[in-house]
Length: 82
Image (cartoon, rainbow, N blue to C red; front, side):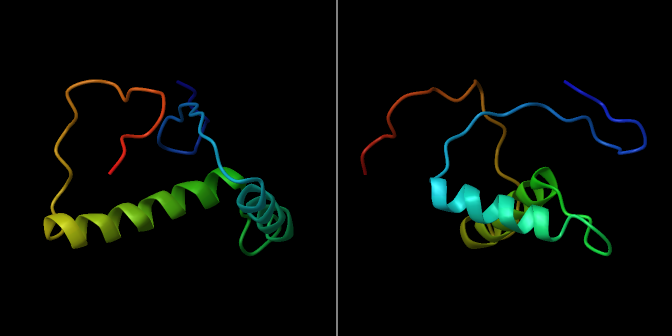
């Protein structure tokens, strides 16, 4: 876990796979909006997107309540078929 001075919450590294097109667009946005007033970084963009989507999912499926804590780590591999 890495803590950055003056930035509040500690950061942890996460590995995930995104489509090349989505990642390229996100990188383009981060570079374009890196200066004032947005001062956007790829991390900030990802955090904001995760927070917004988690809020949407909590409202849709749990009436706004928090998701229950998991009892273990996520398992890697292929997704479970629906």
